[in-house]
Image 1 (cartoon, rainbow, N blue to C red):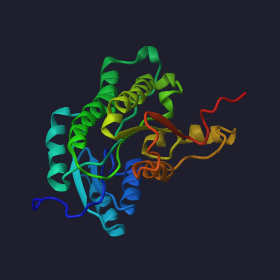
Image 2: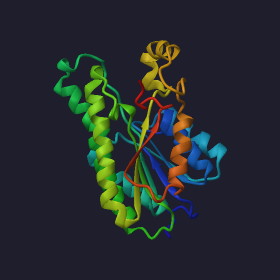
Image 3: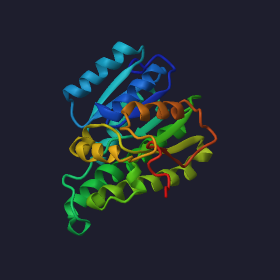
Image 4: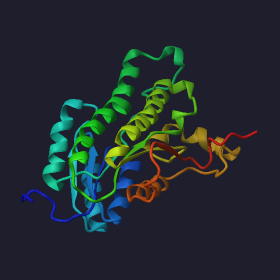
Length: 262
């Protein structure tokens, strides 16, 4: 093991888009379960630096920060090499990074620029990052449980016509998970899709008033805003191999929002 490589045998988790929000809560939860953590944000921001410090102050694990935009596929190989140089392996990839539309509007007015941006950030980036990392997972002799966990959205299944390109990108992520699940089962790598519902994050701030009104009318069976910690608890359970006979499944963390009701 070279000098750059982590000296412990903790499982290693790479969480994209983990400088704050859902990604950060996932990183913190996994660190408390003794995962070494790779944090990621588009830039070396104050949020990314604080995320690292928070994890180091709360957990006795190694943390590597990788500030780069995952939609730039040309950077994937270089960044994955940095992880392998540091830890020697990746046991869990959590495809969490993503964006919403710049402006909500009629599906008939969606532009090619907006469509391409959402597909590039929410789908293409995850597909090719997964492809790159899986190559190393297959070669690894690590005895840790290996998994790919995609953070999709309830909008993978529930149509929202004022942000069509977002829904399409998230729906495609769900199919991506199924495809990788079938291919990777023989490699002992499990794949899961997480479909969050209404979660209180920076992404949902612009629609906070709208959904507060809907919650007053009984928006979902468990009628409250979800929290990033709600997602982190389930992801931690999965990443630790507690659902090892499940792969390719979509897990709804939405307070029962998508249960058909009459």
